[in-house]
Length: 201
Image (tube, rainbow, N blue to C red; front, side, top):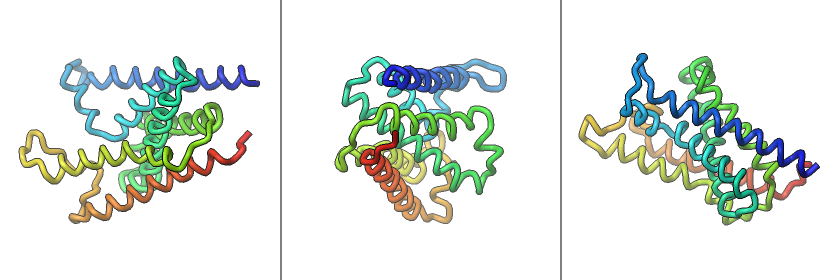
């Protein structure tokens, strides 16, 4: 049974790795032209960054399945894409439209990859997760939140400034968005913490 679980785990992780390699390569193409600068565009989106994080962790967990550091990297990647998935399903889907956020590449990064991450981490790569270490799952959101706040609200140079593409500063209520994201991310981390105490198989 263990060997079967390992094979399934490797296959699922490879799916994430392969599709993110493909999407990363395709990010350099825009309007039929391949340009190096096009590849910089997705780097400002948490969705893309969290999926790249997950893909790197997925590769490392295949190569070093016993490493605790690698497993923690997989955890932070899983927590990050879980935030992505829930944000899309609860916030972006109703406001932008599910056909937009769950079509093509977005379907993979917003839903399929997160689901793969959840299954692999909680079942196939299962280990006990302490309360302290569970809080590390908040790091990607905190770090990105600082960057997003800086780029949207602090930077004045129009060429370097970001539009509020996630709408978190709508009506100037960025502080509410911060509280909601932190509380939501903490809840996700606690879900993984308590899941680690339950015998799922």
